[in-house]
Image (tube, rainbow, N blue to C red):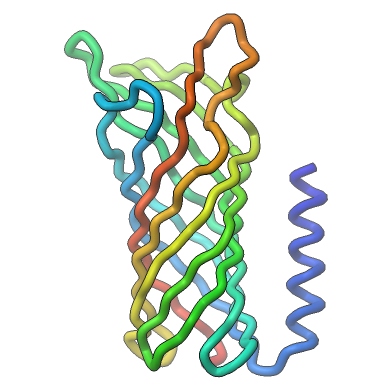
Length: 195
């Protein structure tokens, strides 16, 4: 299923790129500040991670463009129990498709995201337990942000990614998942080619 979705996204991107003049592609990377929200998550703390990937920008008008991205992104939360520190480590391939509104060098963006799980583990001190079997493989969410185009190629952005889907499966007798979702702030530097 993952391969089919990625193939469809690549095919759509290629077709759209041929139909548009002045398409821009680029790279982006930055820091994540993530947490898990929902049932019984009050004691969880923010966790730092990073994201890195690529994007394409399809101009509809001078003010509006559509920007699909493919990003590797680290999410999760820190936890402490009985004096021991640990956390939830979640690794995804994020595919946001955002509407971007440009106001001179300032921009605003919003749209849906779909994330494909690569790795899920629970860590306590020096021990890590693979938790992928208990984690949903696809995570649906939304993103909204703003930023500033520093130069013709270089941009700085701040974005919030909120989860709509539950992170963990609730069909297991071994694990009580609860209603928990991803919550991530991203600070990014991007570089656009073709500006």
